[in-house]
Image (spheres, helix red, strand yellow):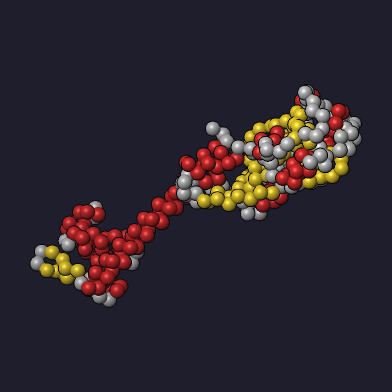
Length: 290
C-alpha cells in the first residue's frame, strides 16, 4: 500500500459508495475498485462489504481507516514543515558573531524573530578567524566577522566600515579633538584581540604606515576585562566604534582617531561558496540588504 491508496480508501469509507468516492477523488470507478481489491489482497482481509446500495466497513476496515487518517495527516504535516523549512519560515539559524562586530545585532535578531517566529537559533561568539573555520567545517552557516581576512572560500556581504577610538580612564586629562596616531605613540596601550588577528593587525599596520612605534603594554581579547582595565587607568586602548556603542556604561574618555590615519575597520557577513545555504540563512542575509 502507498499513501495514494490510503487516500482512496478514506474516500471510499466516507462516501460509502465507489461511484461517489471516485467522483470525489477524480478517477473513474473501475481503477478505484481495483485499488480496493489490491489492498484487500495485500492485507488478506475484507475491508468493506456491500449492504444494499452502499458499503459497510468491516472491523479490519475501521482499523485501517483510523491509521489511514493518521498517516495522511502526518504526510500533510511533513510536507508543510519541509516547505516551511525550505521557505525559511521554520528551521534553524546557525550564525557566528565576532566579539565586537555589530552593535545592533540584538535588534536585527528581534526583527528576524518577528518575521520568522518558528525559527530556532544557534549563535556562537568567537574571534573572526575561528568563525571562518566553523563556517568551513559547516558547524555554522553564517558568520559576522571583522575584516581583513583571507576569504577566498567565502561569499562576503560588506555591512559597514567604522572608525576607531582611543579610550582612556577618566583620570586622564580630557581632550576636545580627534587624535592622531603620532599623539598617542607613547601612550601605554592594551590592544584588543590577539596578535595576528583582525583588529590587532589593523592597529599595528596603521602605526607601521606612519613609521611609528606604539607603546604596547599588552593585549586583552576579553572585552569586559579590557574595559575594566582601561577605566581603572591600567592603560589605554584603541577600539572600533561598535565596542563603544555596546559598552556605554564604563567611566572612560573616548577620542576619535583622525580619519587621516586611515585606521578603519570593516564588518561583513560570510558564508561558504558553492554550498547549500538554508532558506533561514538566506532570509537572515536579506535583512542586511533591505
